[in-house]
Image (cartoon, rainbow, N blue to C red; front, side, top):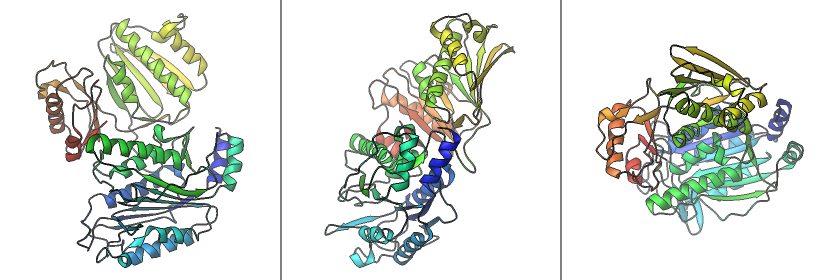
Length: 490
């Protein structure tokens, strides 16, 4: 999609106006205080603010919380703010209302619980149906209500979706589309759980934020639709609850619409304000292609899918060539926002020059890659300080969004217990450290030993992301990472 097409589609999508509500603290003994509801509301508000693909009108949007210091989540204030935001949003803008807090069900009715409710009587609560009635009076084209609360779901009414996307039919479709949608974290008779792989957010909102950030699995042909976002959230929430907790939590969607609703165009991811760009991030490459490919799943890609696919293949070929033919014992991969550099330690060996004389296989693919993307990627080579240095420079800047990649290596230790000497940490300090469990099956106690040592060695305010590459899952239990908010398990 070129710049002109993207501009037209963004104009047709329109700006979004948001009200985000989080309630942690309750005056009511019927409802315990929560830990993550205010963080949920803030996290969702921030992702709408920072990810420009979501096109938020920040000046018209608002965040309100009840967190023990502020008490903005009262019944009166919530209803007043909902009515006020429906008046602020214009006819060519979209409305998004998010709530995280307690929910309640009584006599077939579903409610959210404000902070000042005295008990669980209906007149103390806010019926979800009432919220829908208020926003349906609004003249805007699309109205989306997202509720992360127990008993918040209603029956799915279905939707007529677009069969295929292209620039011509999509811009006309967007002009005529209308919708009112309720996306809820659970069924009408189900609980909604705070416990999640995230130390910050509840289970439902963890995957909601991932989708809004442009997680590839949540997109449909480069677009984030309400339905594709819901499918991503539903699959992850249900799987975690069933496999690890033995419970049911099934996010729910109910809508009235004349087609599929598009939230944003993610063929090019753009951020606003502060973000997680590193000046450079160095990854130590091990002779394990699965781990190499797993690391790249943590990159948010801006460049086209075909270019990125071929770039990964090219890097893989250069790395394998370095290990197998150049007999290198050490290879580093350095990634910045617009460049990728390989440091292949050993004798001088000009892989790019050699590729020009290779007709097929690995280096032949490298040569074809450089020819096919001549106007998009420049390649450079030099030999310096015992290193063959190959740099790929991407013309579309920035090419990558890097999210705190810091990979931990473990020495081969057989079946004995891990010790501190077995852990090889990357240089520098990261917010997230990535540990890939060995592919061979090992005892759960050994992994727990390694994880314990890693947590002691990395900064106290950082998080350890564990990728289980074992054939048989279960090297670390769900309870291990639920009970320790510094651990994320994949």
